[in-house]
Image 1 (cartoon, rainbow, N blue to C red):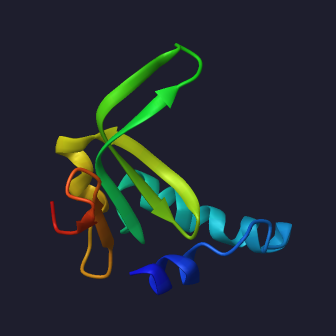
Image 2: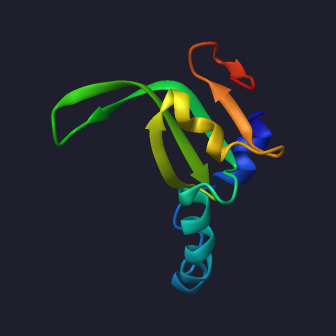
Length: 97
């Protein structure tokens, strides 16, 4: 699993502006749920620095090192496909939630 994460998430910025512009339509498709994410971290919490609170019970969808969605854990299935790496943060191991 570590090798998969290293392959997907090399240090930023590794892409040119042109490459990011080329990825934008695909990022939008994944964010809408019409295409699948590379990685979904489910059953996690994150800090909302604007509201100053911790939001629990969320899932984070990632495509090519870009966060494309943060949703309630019950709705993350729209981002999961056959090739999606799913990490259940409560179990701390790869799973299909």
